[in-house]
Length: 189
Image 1 (cartoon, rainbow, N blue to C red):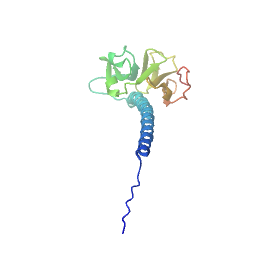
Image 2 (cartoon, helix red, strand yellow; image 1 turned 135 degrees about the vertical axis):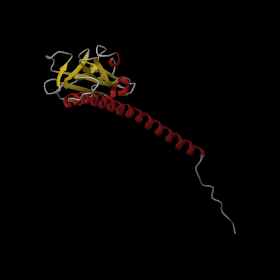
Image 3 (cartoon, helix red, strand yellow; image 1 turned 90 degrees about the vertical axis):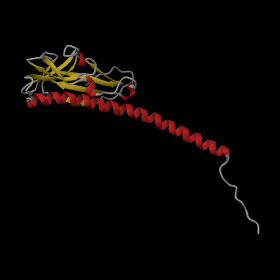
Image 4 (cartoon, helix red, strand yellow; image 1 turned 180 degrees about the vertical axis):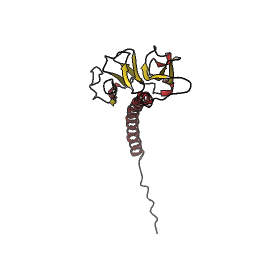
């Protein structure tokens, strides 16, 4: 009786083609994941900014006080006029009648991605929520009715931007994502 040995399998060429296809598919997945990660980071950072502004607004509505100071207003700022801690990303502060401004949430505590940039139509950007009704005053000017911050990813502009809009009439704070238009100047509705 003869024993037949089966030598069927993959040839070297077939194996190299399969590895090349696998490598190409893997690289496309990694590139797509990186762009998706930037978009997720931008959304997370925008939500952190929204949360910081709402924290200031809620603190003013609640009339939050401390034994250490008497609060006149709570606010959010992108301005060195409030503190040197508020220049690029922004901070939440309390305005007291004793010591002036006290930082409650600094830029470092917001912990935004290094790729996230924030721009303002109004410079300096200071939004005060006055106690006890959280009336909104923008840049110490009661005639300004609304203002917006543009939050974007500086390295991947194709993922768009978010707009953080604050209305002094209604006190409403909104976060929106306008559609991305290639080559158009960033704006908020």
